[in-house]
Amino acid sequence: MEQFKNDVTVVGTGRVGLPLALSLLKKGLRVNGIEKDENIINCVTTKKMPFNEAGYQEILNQYNFSLNTDTSKISDSEYLVITVGTPLRKHIEIELDYIKKVIDQLSPSIRKGQTIVLRSTVAPQTTEFVRKYLESQTGFKIGNAIFLAYCPERIAEGKALEELETLPQIIGAADAESGRRAEKLFRFLVDDIFITDYITAELSKLFSNISRYIYFAVSNHFMVLADEFGGNIYEIIRMMNYKYPRQIIASPGLTGGTCLRKDFGMINEHIPYLDMLLSAWKINEYIPNFIVSHILKRTPIHDKKVAILGYTFKRDSDDARDSLVPKLIRYIERQVPKEIKICETNFAQGFCFENMMENHSLEQALQEADLVFIAVNHTFFETRIKQIFNMCRLDTWFADIWNLSNMGKIYFQKMEVPA
Image (cartoon, rainbow, N blue to C red):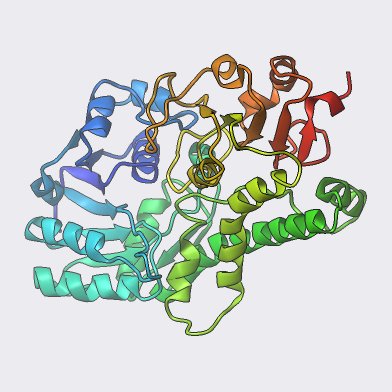
């Protein structure tokens, strides 16, 4: 029987890996991490969460959790949990280089008795590729000398602490012993566990994200149609959903993020024809264009002062990866406004975004603004909507795709706001 100093090493301690590591640590396991990002290492070393995730700062304060860059340290752990990114290439093609690189780095230190858990969102057949690649690189047989399982995470950002201990865990394995060992690990977190094969586990994760992506695309498509016909999408939603036992339409909005925006492509790579997944992508990606082109039917943007409220990909998040707000800004820039000021409350004032624009306070962004785009439905803006209106002129135009203002329409001027 192999003996290990640690129970788990999490390889990659970003938004997926770090919450998992700390949750397992809280359950009494011996956990450490491998990380290459110096910012994350410095934050964890100084007992500071590198990103917002409710409840984990307290866990980090209470427990000792160490990170290092030395991949040889993985030989001390019974379980290796890999959480590297799995991006989509430009031409709807899966990127496997990240996984290959990690396996190349880990393989010299992998030893008999270890269980490798693939935690990232992956395309169909990726785990089978990992099985073959691991065997070729290590010389160990999966299910005999070492073990492999695909155990997708399904948490929502901001809810990891709750959902890691409540959402049922799906485990994909090609042999019984790999499945049993993965189940043993996740029993520390949840009671409900399903064991299946690789492909079914992979599809379960992808279908979870894609179904939400399509659901939001339907709402966004209806929003575009309603405005084309001169209708009010929020009045339509209110009437159709009121006391109706089956909700018909969700609220529209910018649908981005590192999962929803790319996961359709992991299926679409294998489909040579047009389908609803590709259509959903086109609809959701069109919404920044829609917001700008349809406000232009009401007021010009050229030579105007524009305020952008929010920059991240979702409500109350500090994650700007795959946000559609930069795309919205680029469409606004095509109209050559006098200036654009961004206010993102989850970043410090003066922070410089990827587009080299500076982050401003709410007051600075709204100063003499001719147009205000409420790009993200942050609680900060929702609870200050009256203050936002008070800082604007009567003729200031608003584009509020989230209906954060409760005006019941996307485009309006401050003079239309009830006193």
